[in-house]
Length: 343
Ligand code: 11C
Image 1 (tube, rainbow, N blue to C red):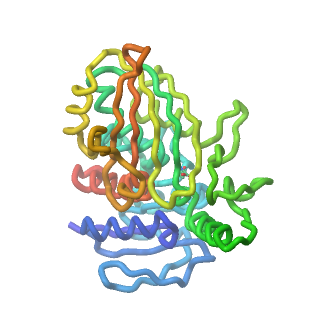
Image 2 (cartoon, protein in one colour):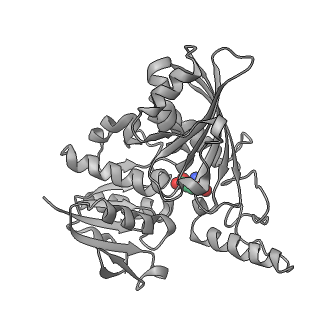
Image 3 (cartoon, protein in one colour):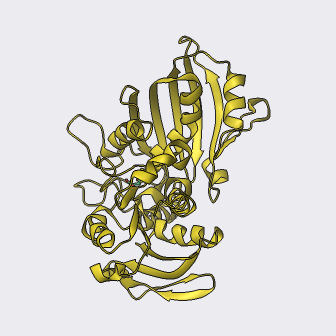
């Protein structure tokens, strides 16, 4: 059986990766429709060596579509996802528009694939920095119980989209040429102040909320509890943008119910779905963003026991934010819909 698939936001950093991933996985597509805002309509993209012209999304675009992958910003999802559902499509939404909606499953297949079957037309893809963290921590939670997570992130500019990638390139060239760096986008498009990202580190991802945490940090906190079905986990996050193009890295401290040895944790993670253990300090083996870029897995290393807290552990988690953090997780959800007849 084959399916009519729409990709909304096809020309964006994530949209392009969605196409690459669908092609790589040879997703059973009958008709493919590439949709975007008016601004990007008319651009061409290739899929399976065929050229497609991107069309402006309208409610009617979703007539006859079975699966719609959205990654064109929350506003577009709010406007068009219900239209797609009304016309019989199942939406996999990679924006924050519906993630905390009680009627919408928020899914990382390695953690809570079964939640997909309860969908009412929309399934949300979590935030990239949340996905890689919960994928690595779920095996620990399942075996040893998870009490607390304290995470600091080192996030790539591609999380902020194609324009942020360009901003980092331009600022780097300007700095190396001895010219002034122009900051017009980061940390957040539309905010009053902008700071250079080249040769810098910005402790703000997304806007600030009333409690002093940024929205990105609150996403990590709230989404983790929803995906893991556990409101009792204590989660704190500090999210930082770095001048890295691809892959988010995270320094994660966890407290478990149990006190396994580091070797036991390594053995468990080495055999966990979607996780690759890269942890041999004696050979300087650990994950890095550059090495993880382009790969689907979540990489974990630097696992060690806290020196004071008996049930405390530190680790370093790295994954391609555009793949497992976005496109690959969305396509995994689509594959699960098809494989399990949950459409
Ligand atoms: C970033 N995590 O790195 C963000 C991007 O809610 O899907 C993902 C935004 C989202 O800037």
